[in-house]
Amino acid sequence: MKVRANNLAIEVEDTGGESRPAVLLVMGLGMQLVAWPPEFVQALVDAGFRVIRFDNRDIGLSQHLDHLGVPNLLWESLKLRVGMPVKAPYGVHDMAADALGVLDALGVDKAHVVGVSMGGMVAQRVALAAPSRVLSLASIMSSSGARYLPGPRAHVLQALLARPQGTSEEAIADHYVHLFRVIGSPGFPLDEAALRERILAGVRRSFHPAGTMRQLAAVGADTGRADDLARVQAPTLVVHGIDDPLVPYVCGVDTARRIRGAKLVGVPGMGHDLPPGVVDRLLQPLVPHLSAAAQPA
Image (cartoon, rainbow, N blue to C red):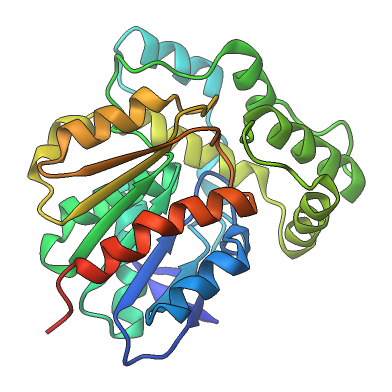
């Protein structure tokens, strides 16, 4: 269903029932709400939660912002390296305002906020912007955004920034299967046939690479978040793959270090994806973390 959030049309899926404590799931760069594994969502519902997923702005069935143009990522990345401000069409704080707008539209006063990758950055910004509305925070395979943290190795970055070799569904699926081979979890098996089917379903739902470019610029421009994280008040869980080739494990360590009282869980063999084995390992600390946090009044 579509809701109006932060003056944008945002696509939302709401599962589990309005009487339950809400868990707001925030997906990563260029990924749609359907990228949340069904077994992950169902496990949270089975644990007694209302699960709210949404397409971030510029992606999926949410409003696309093509009138803002496509940033020159090469130029902006060079500026970032030398400490110059990055120019982005919108910021991570705007995406956090979208997330809060989703809660407003659904009449949810307080929620647990769970984000993966870029979604973890958005979740951190939600916790900073509206501490009274965040029951707990979970930042998964994400980063504080501190300037000195390492980034992906050259071949990983090349795979991330590459474009499909054609415009057909199959060419796009080939591209993303290769990307997940590069960034995936070496300790957990990858069912490439199932992955391809999920990718094809997502492409048929929506394929909007220009939105991904604008989101990536927003991430690069959010350079002040690291210093702000000391102000996070919500009980925080940080989960990170020890073998993450895209956002190295030290990024999760740094995030947990900056948030007072945060619990860090490192997962051996986990990379930057959500295969079934990783989902099980995420749920083990996540469900108790959500259950232990204060319930809404």
